[in-house]
Image (cartoon, rainbow, N blue to C red):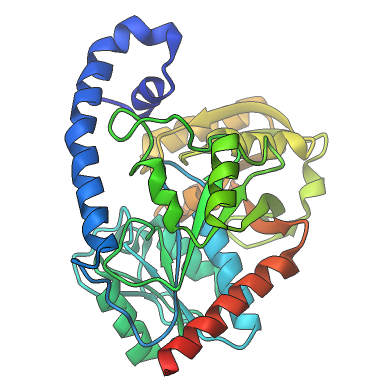
Length: 373
């Protein structure tokens, strides 16, 4: 099976494996050409309004990126929805439900009061968002125009947050937030499948604002992003992924993150940025005895979990910890949930959340005014 880390070696031009992956790299480069032409032509059609973007009767915020892999969209959406709720809005979150098996056009993951779907149907991120947001409906479906209308008509939503929608140009966005990982910002990157870029870097000119994520782990902006933001007058906000606490998976018992200091910890995850999870544990002072990495969105088997449990017992560690996204995929293993803890994180805009909040509220006010006229 061709694994994700093989693609990462190609994307990163891994010199250690350059001879091994040269044929695959060549094929990927060739395939990138027609893909790039199609993407550029599609964007041109939307830019020229030959393909119209449908405007819904309430403001729409997109939270997306230009690369494959995790940039922190889920914690950003949760932060954004809570901020809107605090300011009197009734937001709803729209997601494609990546990894979910439902083929319905509208899937109500949460009606804002209770969870209605499991992760296999809804997808990991959608269910995690739903579990994290009280009073906020979460809906999945391939067409955000359809799910957006459902959110407005069924739940009275007056602002829509679209998950991973920067390239989904069928729906008009009043605010386009583009997340860029501080450690892997796009620069002289290649287009898929040769590289991580979903579209050429010029597409970032459509952004309403950049949010640089995980700035506590690396540089803030590279020259290409900085120059583009200045030329297009695109505001830049910095953010960190801040550990909130750790909780017992089976009963919700909470500990402050400081509880990990000096403790022996075993950990595992199947997320896009496993190193960020490990770095958070190390920064909290944990002694990480083993760290098992699986592919992003990995569906665990009983045999795999049995091996993880055995390692935990053999090491006599204090905690066996995983991420919130991984815990979502473990609900069918209640006995395993009895022994694991979950690290919960949240996004924080630094140094001033107030500036980000002001930007969002001003943009929404302008959007609402334009819809009235």
